[in-house]
Structure formats: C-alpha cells, structure tokens
Amino acid sequence: MTSSTSAPVCFDPGRARHATRCVALADVLDLLPLTHAPERVEEYRRAMEAGALFPPVSVLSLFGRLVVADGHKRLTACRPLVDGTLVVEVWPFHRFLRDQASQVRANARKNAAILAHAFTDRREALRLLRSTAGHWRRVALSLRELSRGASRG
Image (tube, rainbow, N blue to C red; front, side, top):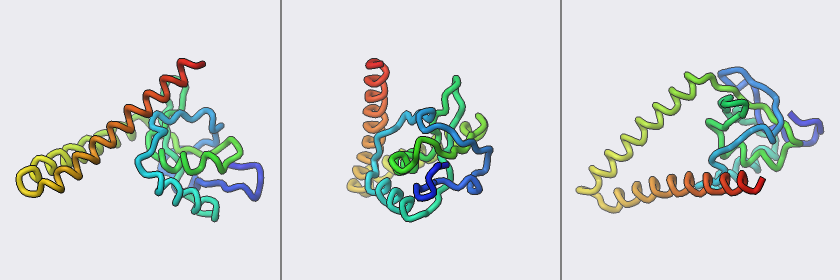
C-alpha cells in the first residue's frame, strides 16, 4: 500500500484467493521482467493511475525470496506508481503446482494445434510457432538480464 493518499494503490487484497502481505517492492523478484505485451502493461498502468484496482501479484515464497508466479504485467505496470511497497498474494506451493500443470496442458494443446495446422493451415501454424518462439525468447532474455544483474553485484 502507499503512504501517500494521491499515489495509486494498484492491488485489491479482497480479490486474492490466498493470504496477502504488504511487502517491499524490492523484496519481489520477477524472473520474467521482459514482456511480450508492452501495450497491455501500458493499458494496466493507465487504469491503475485512474484508480482501477487489480488482483494482487501472486508470489511464491522460495528460499526466503518472493518470486512472482503470476502477474508479471501487473507488477511491471504498478512498479513506477508505488512508493516502494505493495500487496502481494502468497501462493502455497500446491497452488503453484496447479498453475504449472495448467500451463503444461495449455502448451500441449497449442503444440497439438501447431502440428494439426501444419497440414491444413500453414499460416496459423506459423503464427502459433512464432508466438511460442517469442515466449521462449522472452524467457531467455529475461534470465540473461537477471544473470547480468547478479554478476554486477
């Protein structure tokens, strides 16, 4: 939450399904800080500036760190608007595993669609393949940036 009444709060703890905490922004580690949708981040930021409240960013407590599990774009949008603290939803590990399983199922469906479209609609197959490649490129670039930051200090 913010100490200034005019500064946006960004997140509504009432929209969380698990325990929430008010934490220092510096304590939240986002392993995927690069986004594939800067226009969506900007849309969220403008809405937050106008007073819209979003569900809290979901984090997983891992080795004493709060690692973002869901809400990368919301965090990126909110980061320049808060005074250094924000509300996060702390996922239990079983919730994180359920989310990962859901992502595996979605990726399997997407890969099956790529294969099916390869024979029937090559443009759609290529679009889906580019989307998948873009995701993994973002993951690789994010991890590279994090490793560079860690190696600097």
